[in-house]
Length: 165
Image (cartoon, rainbow, N blue to C red; front, side):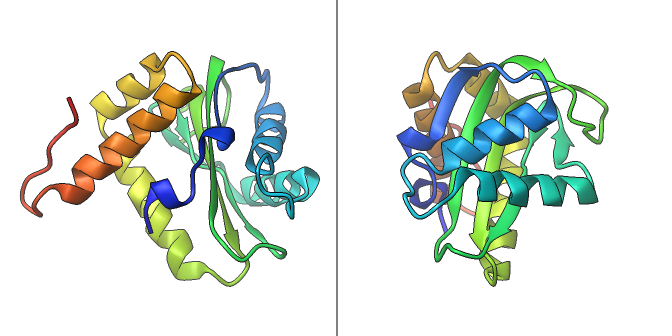
């Protein structure tokens, strides 16, 4: 599964104002439901917050990957937000978070869930990728940046990874 299959421009946002983890998750719930009429933003938020109560999804370097399972969905959905100001997210490195990728999967989609989480963790472990995402001036550039990094990683031979120019 590729990020281009789960992330749309309508579910990508920059300059988001969220003064707290709860507000960021509420925003992501609404963002995820933007072009998914069957989704209830409140249900999405409740799924994200329920997972967050188990432990922070802040993976370090200013990144969080909140994720949850949805009963009324038959496909994986992503939403990406760059916050105007970093917020406390109880991340593993205790640093505030400004890039969030919400991942929502059908209730029984364990393999897809783990596959996309691994792909996101790999992408966000790249310092250059994080920097370019933070420099994206708008949602279209943010989306293009994440998709170009994924394409470069996907197209590179196993022993060599290239970066987009």
